[in-house]
Amino acid sequence: MLKDNYRLKKNKDFRVVYQNGKVIPSKYFVLYYKPNSSKSLRIGFSASKKIGNSIVRSRAKRILREAVRKHLEKITVGFDIIFIARARIKGIKSTEVENILVNLLVKNKLLNR
Image 1 (cartoon, one colour):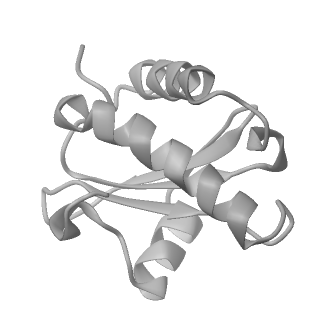
Image 2 (image 1 turned 45 degrees about the horizontal axis):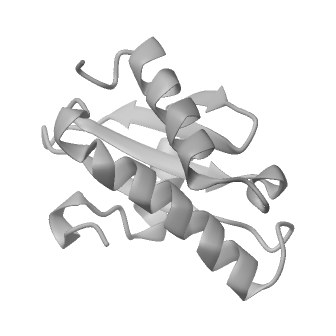
C-alpha cells in the first residue's frame, strides 16, 4: 500500500488528470499523467467493472500498485499519475506488468534511471 501523501483519492483530482493530462496506452493498462502544482508525486489506480468482478479488479490494482511501489523512489516528482487496468491484465504475471510499466515511465521521462 502506498502512503497517503502519494495517493490520488478524490474524484475531482482524477477528472482533472483525465481531462488535461497526457495518455499513454499499453497492452495491460493505460497511463494518464499531468504535472501538478504542488511539486509532489500523487498516484491513483483504477479498474472498471468491464474487467471482471471485485476480486479480479482488486488483483489488477494490486499488481499495478506493487509494480509502482518497487520503483516509487525513482519516479519523477511533480506529477499526478493514474494507472487504469485493462481486461488483458487478468492472467498476466506481475513481472511482465512491471517491465512494461518501467519502460513506459522511462520512455516518457517519468522515471529517473
